Each structure stands twice: as C-alpha cells, then as structure tokens.
Length: 230
Image 1 (cartoon, rainbow, N blue to C red):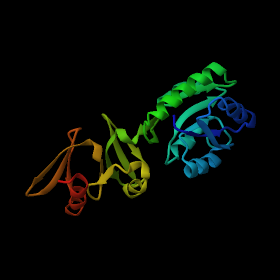
Image 2 (image 1 turned 45 degrees about the vertical axis):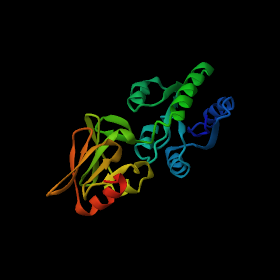
Image 3 (image 1 turned 90 degrees about the horizontal axis):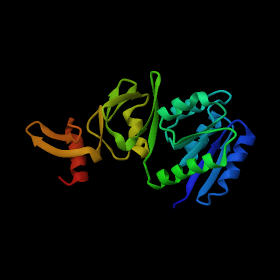
Image 4 (image 1 turned 30 degrees about the vertical axis):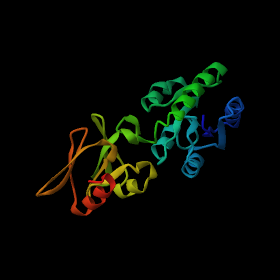
C-alpha cells in the first residue's frame, strides 16, 4: 500500500491529538500537519494536496462544509464531530465516513479500512460543489462535459448537471482536469468519453459515449488530431 498523506482539521487540540494517536497504528499514513480552522486548512490543503483529511464540521468562522466548497483540490474526507445532526449531509457529499466524538477504536478502524481500500484504488480527484441546498462531491473522471455559463462552469456528470463558480481557463490550469480538452471557446470535454471522431465539410466533430456531439474549432482540431492520432 502506498503512503497515504493526511491532514487533521479541528479547532480542538485534544481532538486533533486523539486522531494522531490512533493513526500511529497505521504505518502507511503520514500526517502532514494540523489546522485549527478552515482558513488554515484551506492554505494547507492547497499547498500539500493530501489524500485524506479528518475534518471537524463546527469550527469558529467557516464550517467544514464551507471549507470543502472553497477547495480546488478535494481529498477524501472523514468527518469527525460531536454532533450527529450532520450525518445525512455528510453522506450527501460522499464522505468516506462520519465519526462521532469521542471516537471508538473499532469505528476508527472501520473508517481507516475504507480509506486504505479507496485511496489505494486511486479513485481520482474530485470537486466539491454546493448547488442550491444540495451538496455534491464529484469525481472529475465522472464529468464528461463542461460548458461556460457566464461567470460559472456547468459540469455534466451522469444525468445531472451543476454550476461551479470558476472559468474554463482556470479549469484548464487545474492539474486534476488534465484529461479535459478545449473544443472551442465555451466547451471542455473529457477525452476518456470519446466514442468516435467525425469529419465532414463543416469540420471535425467528436461524439461522446453519452451521445453528445461536439464541434471542434479548426484551431483545436489540429491539437486533437495529435492527441488521438487521427
């Protein structure tokens, strides 16, 4: 099992130390650092890009959910909290687990077993989005199409779509989005979803496995040909 890099985020020092103590039984885990609030955590996550975070929900200032909403790199999440009222919301964002304080050893082991299996399988980078009253933790590998929508980007995954407050230019710069190709000014698509490439008098078109037909600008068609050797 490769090394799992983690951060502990909790406003209570004692709670952070308890998680660190329990992690000593897992030699494959490296604790990169600790944060006492969302502001500190956001800087550390952006800098260190951990695989896993242990995250408190109620903290001074911004909550754990607020933190996730503002992250570019979203690791796997195990929530650690004294309140059971957030459990449903936590699993709505596909949290790996939800541990209640004080943490029981057997529950911690169960959460770590999941983490080791899932992170070891390289499940892929994700983005956290709050859309109206619903939260989404979306794997970039599950997104097949991204469209520009004024100051937002509209992400299409499965049968759903959500808005992310960012530009296509910023997404192109995000290393987690390296499998996305710029079809033109307003569209990115996932190269892994290509079903076929079509050419006619109007130029080049890509058909995705989802059925979407995307016209490729003349300029970008040259780049795409070099990528897919067509």
